[in-house]
Length: 173
Image (tube, rainbow, N blue to C red; front, side, top):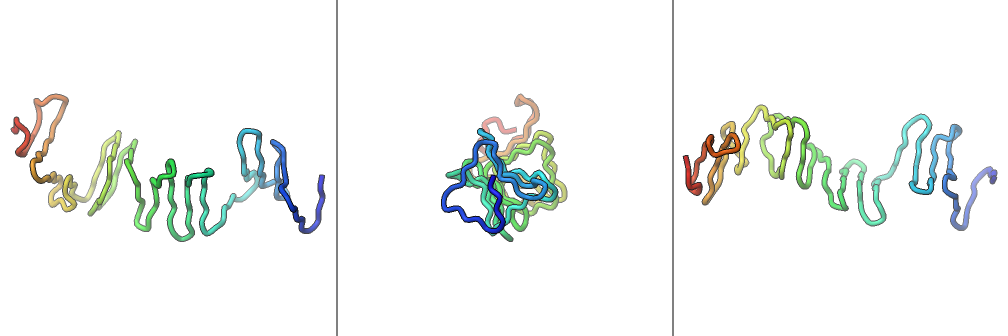
């Protein structure tokens, strides 16, 4: 046991064995240790564990997993590729977005790029128009295309019920 009052300076590494802990606080509030398999920074006391810095990054040796910048952005990564970042007006998702509940939003006036949206319980849009192939739909549902394209609305698994418009489908109805 080493009991020191004042400042201690070590000229080399300080080694601890598995399950040996660096313990801070009168109530052993903060503990840093390795159990032989995993490493821990444990806040076991009262209050919050605060990581403070102008930029806080969670990384493995080679890749970013999350980056937090003061008064700026937050970035979440998958396999070192940025996938999610909050913005001053909402959030940006890079890639596909899968929603397992109801996706609801009000008064959307422009969606530049959504990618693929999958919703198990449906997509609900209130207070506006929906456009496919257009950024400025002037009716509740507008499907637009150019060149040799056609629009189709179908119900069921067969071709028995449908509404198809256009110039490229051979059995236009």
